[in-house]
Length: 238
Image (cartoon, rainbow, N blue to C red):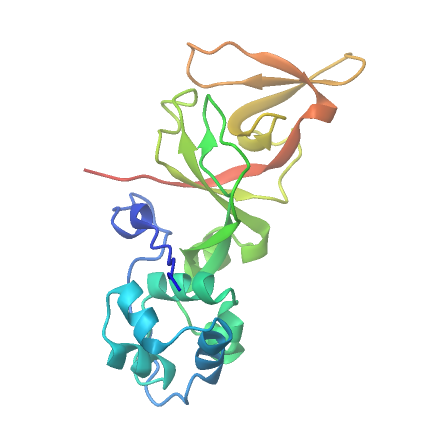
C-alpha cells in the first residue's frame, strides 16, 4: 500500500527569525529501553520497517534503531511517524520520554489562513513541533492552548507576510485585549484586527486589515467565530 508521510518542508527547510519552531535535532536517549509503543503503532498501521524506511528516505537499520531505543529520533521524523501511525507521541514513546523532548506538538489548522482571501477549513487537522521552551517558559501556556497557522495573502502586511508561521492562543478570545486574531468568518480562516461596534443591535464586529488597501467590514457577531489571538510569529529569512 502507498505510504503518505507529511514532511512539512516549509518548516523543516526554513530559518526562523524568532525563537520557537523546533529545528531538526536529535534527542539524547542513551540507555533507554526498547520503544515498544513505536513498534506496536507501526504494526497497527500494517506497515513494515522496509515500507517506513523507503517512505522516509532512511535505512531499515535506522528504523530498527529508533524502535529499540538505540538512537534518538529527530523532531520532524517524530512528527511524520505520529501522523503516519495516527498515534500520539505518548503512545509512540511513552510519557517519560516525551517529557524529556525539547519539543511539544501543537495542532495546526488544516489549511493556510488568509490575510485577505481566507483559508478554507478543509483537510485533516495535523500537528507541528514547537520548542518546549517557547511554549512553557516564554508563552507560559499548555500545548493544547495553541494553534499553529500559516499566513496566506497580503491584507495584514507589514505586520504579517505570506508564509509566516503564527501561534494562536485559543484562550485569548476577548476583544478587550489588543492584537490580531485568528477567526472563522463564515467563508474561511483569516487573521484580522477586531473590535465591537458599540450600540449595534444585533451586535456587530468590525473586521480590519493592516494593509490600507483593504477596507474594514462589519459582520454579525454570530457569524464570527474567534479562534484566538496571535501570540507569536516565525518568519523565513533569506
